[in-house]
Image 1 (cartoon, one colour):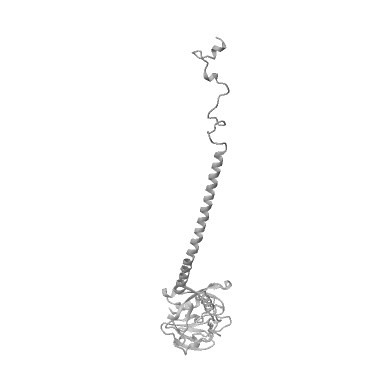
Image 2 (image 1 turned 180 degrees about the vertical axis):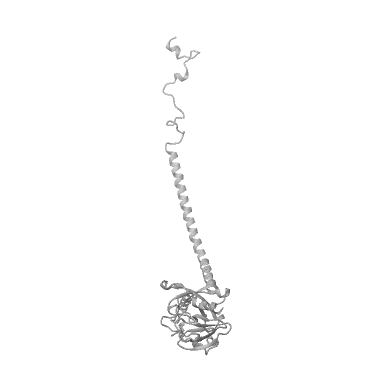
Length: 293
């Protein structure tokens, strides 16, 4: 069989595949396949365009959300301020209030300009104890020449600012006093024994822990006086200059202050930081209950 016979089919006709000239097209190859009608690079451009659109949309959405949050904050701010003011009013009226120390009558325990926090609910739970420092309203019971007078505000703005300072304990109110409880209802108080000590129910008080350095228990004698029911005998720690129960015996109550005039217990100094600390009842006065028992 000659070469021409090898190139013929069984019917003597040359195969079409073998008769086609040129290299065969390779379909499906990784490098040679192309989609008809799609120019090179069109797919990449489309993907980049889609990605850019998504980024722009995300940016717009983020800006929109940020604007909504800012708008929401400004809308909610007045409500938050009102809530804060209501809470502050409730706390100040019934729980805790700050007070400014305007005079030197409680030196060195309390100095002029100190700020104390007063617990206004504690005496709703328990009785007042000897030695505790209390804030009270002396109207009708005391005539203290050392009371700090607060000038009348000259305009509404000044008045509002003064009021705010008083609520924060940054300015005196001119209405409240602060002293230490020496005698409780029914106690007999007097001064003095042979060592110039104040006595309660016949027992002399050891007051060195809180009296002004170098101060004596009292520069004036008094008593014996029985503290009326519902009243307290109150004295300052700087006895030489404190116009307390001793010097108000000609006023209603005989110098004693009604318990219902007590605002609350001063329990901590919050300013200045160098003076900060708790105001606890002295152990010597706590021991008086044991001695009586």
